[in-house]
Image 1 (cartoon, rainbow, N blue to C red):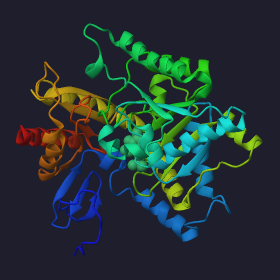
Image 2 (image 1 turned 180 degrees about the vertical axis):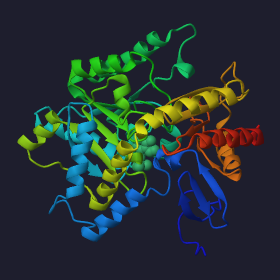
Image 3 (image 1 turned 60 degrees about the vertical axis):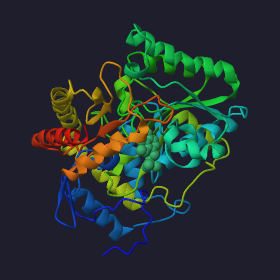
Image 4 (image 1 turned 90 degrees about the horizontal axis):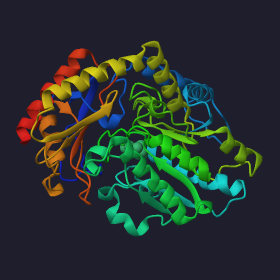
Length: 442
Ligand code: PLP
């Protein structure tokens, strides 16, 4: 049935054809069933047959499926924005809807720059981000990210005003004998040092993932880290952008992951779970202060895309939120997350090649090492995480792999981000299949 004209990302791999989705399962053309253990890439938070969301999209498409935002606003966009602002940290006021995570982070970065132009501080142009981070694949977002595997070959195209400080990953990077809190303060203070080096008057924003996703594998910050980061940003008038593209929308048991760490950012980016993958949707939320600077200034955000606030996508987002609320799925994420954590610790806590198990809610990472004591990463050329993905897929389980970074700073890992609608037995099944897959690899 395939006509060999789709340009796949992996050009030498033959992929099965997916023909159906049913809750936690995906089914291929041969009838083989795959348990979704990663939501694709932390996307499918309601699984694969969320009828109320499908119905909401159909109803919206029967009403008005698309209208350009230079002419109209739409009811689903207005309603979804109201809902998101209700849930967001209390300084958030406006929502800018786009179609994907990279568009959301690019929007935030450009809005930070424009904000400072509007308020008469045109010298603020630097964006500080972190190593071993990921903010998207378009050039601006890629420049902000610190995943060298993704960006190395595009280095000549990267934005020079974007600079990087160290990540916050105690297990991998702490000095011998250094306590968690002291480590967190030390790496947070790198932001202060970088701001001083660049000149505070030249820095626009700091962007980070509250829990690092794809590059390091579900690494939460240590206590006190974000308190210090916020103090530094505030002191120097540097905007704080939280990239919650992967961990927002309930994935960690709160709608916004920033809430776990009492972070009050100036902007938040969400995507992935916002419309559960049923429609392409993402959003950038910003504070009243930023919005007002534009409104009272030029009156125009100099950034946009054709599919801004797409009505069908916003209708999906609204229906997803209604599902999360009416089915108490945030509590369910916390409950299932505790079961997943306990199961992972039991199955892999002593595994010779699982060095670390970390995460929050339904967002977990397993770091694969040559041996637990030395924590040595595998040679990235071995493609260990990719082999684990392949073995798991053969056993009917989807997991999200990430190879070690080419700077050797971060090892291979596996990311787990199952749908919130899992039954308890799906957690057991995921762990059993993952154990068999790791046996196949090692
Ligand atoms: N930011 C983070 C934290 C992500 O994890 C991702 C994607 O994985 C992105 C941005 C980019 O999102 P998208 O792939 O939808 O452009």
